[in-house]
Length: 69
Image 1: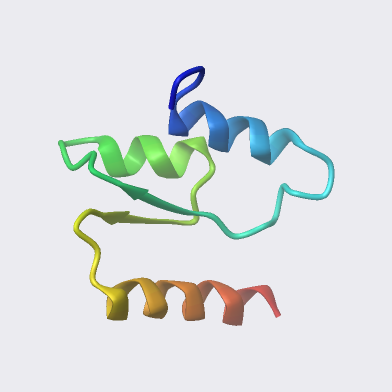
Image 2: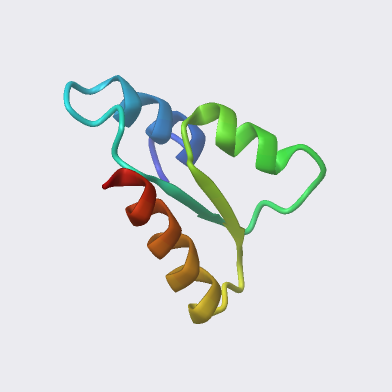
């Protein structure tokens, strides 16, 4: 991302009125020690690394949506 990174984008989204509880999945190539925790601390509800499997992504989305209801 040219101006801010994904972690900062998630932090800013969480601060926007009405978006604090919107489910977010960090879909990233970051797979080093601590990257998952950094994404979750920035506001992600879940963390998946690339290459992502469609079944895994669908499962994560379903879990987050079922919690939101």
